[in-house]
Length: 159
Image (cartoon, rainbow, N blue to C red; front, side, top):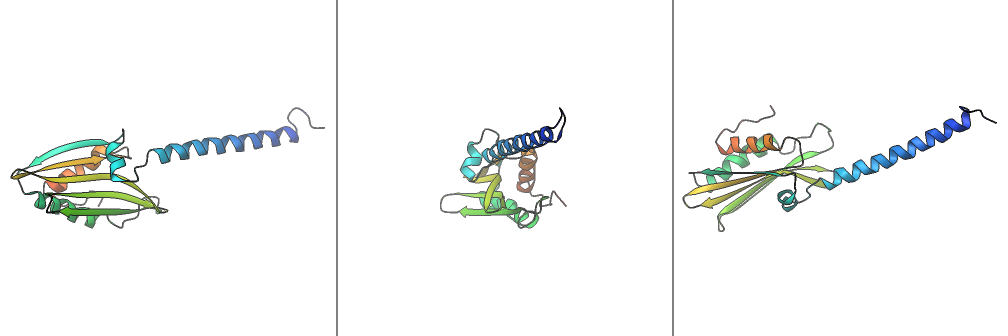
């Protein structure tokens, strides 16, 4: 028979602690998955997404080009700090419709999580640039990076 702090009581405490840890781990996992944007539409609709709109006098195709080049050169294919996820850049220009879209996502174990999207639209003789950033604590920083590229500064922010 074990005493008050005997072996039997310790085993129960360890088992209880293990189940408790698993319960909190599942809660954290569910929370993490709920804050992911697996499509650019999810990113736009997310409550944590920040949006910014900018106007340019240059043609929308020029602004599109200014963003796509540095995004692909600086980000695409790079591994993240966890070494488990890589950065993907998707870019499509719809000349017949007068707009283009560029987005950045992390691909990890087959799941994509979008961090930013830039929509570049013809606006009269100029361009309207709308940037959406989310799923990170540095949403404004991502917007600033995309705006910097649109302003014709192709430097890589992470080098």
